[in-house]
Image (cartoon, rainbow, N blue to C red; front, side, top):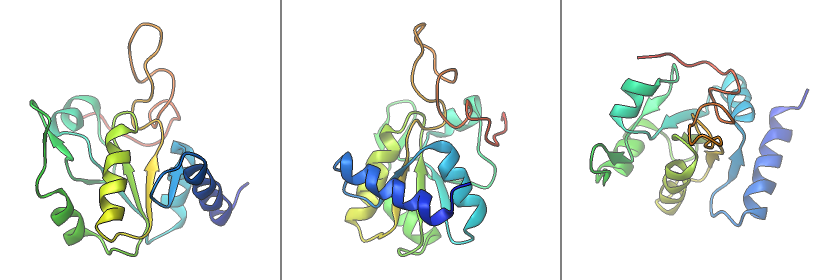
Length: 150
């Protein structure tokens, strides 16, 4: 079984290979292990309220919309809310539906002084399958990690 340090090193190497400006890129199972083993790590779910209500939530996650439904307007208070809930030096793991908005959130947080940001690749629902549906190929749900239907 990999140690937390090994997982974080792999995430850091992945981020460097992908030329990401933040600390690391984690797979869902790796992120879950970090959250289980580190009392300092915080999961921040940046999906919209509608997604959380209709698709499901991750127990214990801090929920801060990056964009608001239905128009997907940017949340002007995203960084302010994040700063009020999290220490800028603690590990922050961002998740969204597929890994795209959480990538944006990790970039924004890093640019505003958060030093230990990670994106959860694949997100909550993962990639689309051949039928154009999510939640069947990859992601937090497919990995069998804890979530609840709203």
